[in-house]
Image 1 (spheres, rainbow, N blue to C red):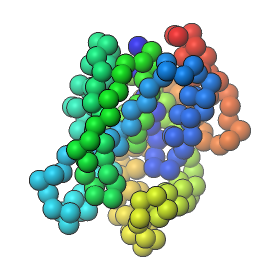
Image 2: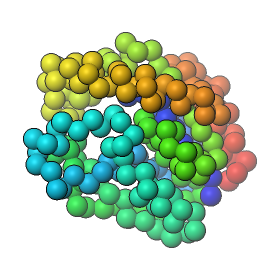
Image 3: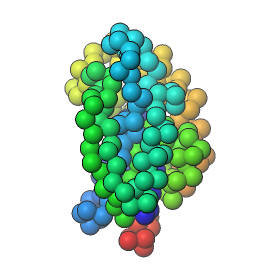
Image 4: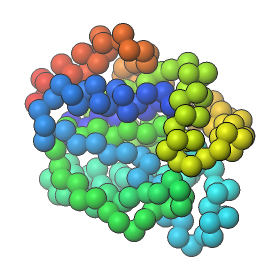
Length: 201
């Protein structure tokens, strides 16, 4: 099994990169795991307590469970991936049965911050995008898909997103094997990743 980690700041275009890779590969041979599914279970907290959590800090992720799940997949065992609700800021209690694939892509802003997880990745990719571009994408997404309002997103950006990005996410570039500048014309890096995957498949 080939495990690829794709990191980068919020709104940098990780999903686009994942889709560009998936589009060219045989269906059923690639699986995707999102770090967002592995936010800590916060059932013991009230909703008001949950909204004060810093979700952009590595402590907000259940890395132990994510690592354990990847180990299980490597052994050929299926896993039950948690389902997370951004509206309730908690896991829903549902899970998604995820089967091992020849290639597993793990994507998320904080995945390269964890040394144990990094060891499991055969290829580590960092998607880089301009700060303004990322803020605009984040605004559009949080307002349209996650029911947030403009002030809420901007306050969060200034108070947690930007400082956490500078402290934890940007420095993980140094662990990346490939840095992909996110623009629509950058096909070379994607082609390199695809060719590595094809060799492995």
